Image 1 (cartoon, rainbow, N blue to C red):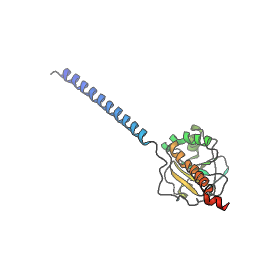
Image 2: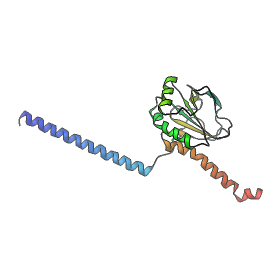
Image 3: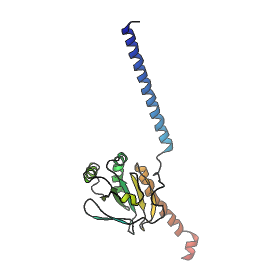
Image 4: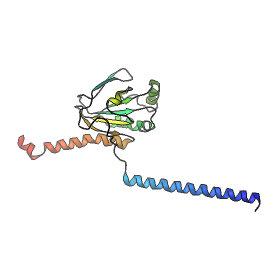
Length: 202
């Protein structure tokens, strides 16, 4: 076998290996897709750290980027969804469009975004994902007050400041799983009001 014949055979083997690897990657990707469709998107991943569901959240006052006063927790007319973000967080960048969509669709929830980092990075983040119309505050330590150490993370507070749900939110399905707690509470209340015992009292 001449040198050139050996070289040509080596190239053929190399191309064959590359084609096999491409086929394997394609197959694995297809299997992952099938697995995702079977399992479906999971709800927000709850973390053990942080405030306990059912407890009353700490009340904290912050200034948003426009100088407006914002309060986390406490009594209010609407439930409050507090989302902790960071402009350097890839998952936060991916969920930003979902946050904007949620703000448009859920008018009966008061949305508040809390971020850390430099003002320049946060303003660039806001402009890139068109979050200018949303309450957005920059605070370096307030997340730790609520035991939040990772982002994106969300807390859903009732109108009385009670923590209704919490967890990591990496996509729209995670956000919706937190907000759906409000619908479940509403249905439970309707069942209670329509129960025979309640009717007898009235």
